[in-house]
Length: 318
Image 1: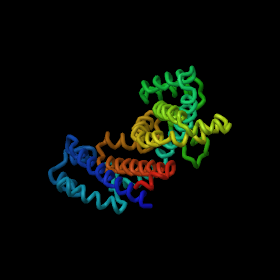
Image 2: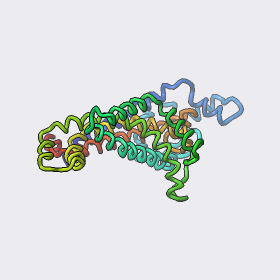
Image 3: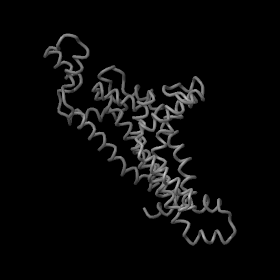
Image 4: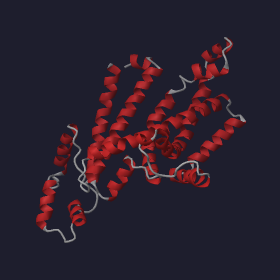
């Protein structure tokens, strides 16, 4: 419990620092937000009285530090404000889109793990073999392909050429499990393709090192099968760098989901962020960044807790 509290105390300042920095950066954007809103709503040029009234309503007449303090106080009570463009509460907009983005990222992460773990273990066990060289060459090739190119290629092959999967859109789970999942297969696989090469190479390297340890030689001398040694004795001590990288890959996962949601027309948080930036809906952008910061803190906390599961000595050293 002490270990958990200590890690949480380290991550909380990160969350507040991210929200503060994003709030400051959004206020450095060129142009006048009041004019942007009024010109979008009215055909006639806004009067000075209109500008002052709207600025007061949105607290834009106050110093930026005061506005951040007001926003932070409201955020801590669960109120992230209302969209400047649609007047929709930010929490409501996020509530509609977060489940979609989380499903996409979860599927992508599961696919990445299911592909990278077996490839990393086999490549590590058969280091420098034809299989290992082929997998490594494929991994380096995938690293060179941008995510939007990978997504476009998958759409062309599996949606247009073969017609096996839909190319875009989203179907709610209430309309059928398969109808929902089939729309996520290509987007999730697109994100996974970006993660697999790095995860596989890291696990391969650690597996090679672990297989040189004395306890592996002891397990072999006892007549244990190769598969049992690899998955029960070698995998766990080789997983520290892998688990760390899963947490660090969160940035790529979120960035990938933004690109993929736009490419595949998925109404998730990423698409909401792009539309909000286009419309200069600063309060909505701030809400999305707050959600991303919370996810980042949560995932990194989960990674730290995984360390304690993989090696209980980590807890005892704190």
